[in-house]
Structure formats: C-alpha cells, structure tokens
Image 1 (cartoon, rainbow, N blue to C red):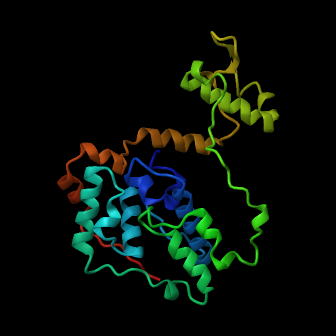
Image 2: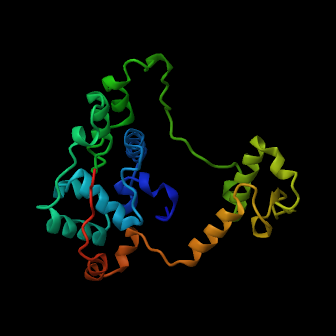
Image 3: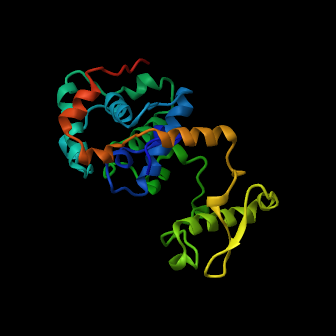
Length: 253
C-alpha cells in the first residue's frame, strides 16, 4: 500500500513498517477516529511515514523491545529501536485523562485499547464491542460475524489482466451508478480476446469518479519519488537516521 494517501493519519503501525497485518488495522483506525471526534482534530497528523511513526511514539510512549517484534523489516525495526533508545528518557506517554478531560472512563478505556502499537496486544472488534461503553446501544442479536473470509474477485479473474480487472471494478460501480456509462467522453468500449465487452482504462479521457483537481494531484504525486518504510530494506540505516535529524516533535495539548 502506498504511504502517500489521505488515510495515512489513520494507518496502523504495522501497515507503515511491516509486510504482515490483519483485521486489527481497522481497530486502530477506529481508535484514531474516536480520538479525533473527542479532540476535534486528528491525533496523529503526520506529514509523511517517518513523522507518523514519531507521533505514535511521542503520544503513546516508547514501546518495549517485545512490542516491536511485529516489525518484520530489518532496517525499519533498527530505525525504530534507535529512535526509542535516544528518546526514551524524554518521551512520556500521554495521560489520557488529562488529554481527554471530562470524558467517560469507559470511552477512554476503549480508546486506550484500540490505540495499542503492538497489534498482538491491541483489542479485537469483538472485545471492543464487549466494553461497557457500548452497553446502552449494543444489540447482540443483531450482530452476525462473517463466518468466512471475504474475497473480492470476478469469475473471469484467471483470464483478466490487471487493466481488465480494473475495468471490471468500474463495471461493478456502474451497477450502482449507471449514469457514468452514459457519458461517452468517459469510456471507450472495446472487446478483448475473451469476448468480454470491457472498458479500456488506457483510453479513458477522464474518470467521473475524480475531479480535475484530484487528477492533477494524482499526477503530481506520481512525479515525486517517495519511499515508505518498506523501502528501508534497500537503504542504509545511518543515512536514514541522519536524514531524520534530531528535531523533537511537540505534543502540545
């Protein structure tokens, strides 16, 4: 996943600096959203992936070595350990009661358990729903957990190229927004070797799903040579550390 999207502020640590992650990334995102609702501003408004990780450490405190074991990229883990070793004495974890004054203790319990850097120790969805904070609104008989993994695919998947799969998704969107197919300037129809009548995204003049400003922004982002923590596998740790500088992030309340 690219690091340079608007959802960066809500991304779990394991998405930023690991190759393995699961359903608990959504639990982290919910915690970020809940904190934003309480504060009226984002809790981790990082400008890039490095600042994002720094903010997590600065606000939630420096995790112990065992809580960094989920990071499976050598250089990313080395950077995290170096940053924590240098700043452990200075960084103090956020006092939730002071930061979120006059808030329901049960709400703060939910917040603390969703914003856990170590995904193994982070609360699950079912555990979150069991917190007393939801007692007044929860209806157990309405809850029907999915008993199988959701797979987003098309029956022709084995024969489709990446471009054709993208087009198939657009056709699915058109089921709910049929008006987009009526605009000839958006799509040019053609048939592929399998006989499917698909839309050629390579010949798409513009998409109805994005404004011109969004398209310009996307083109601009493609022209920049960004790299995420995953790219640290090919970068020297000392070079990365030097590029970070020794600037400390403020956690003003």
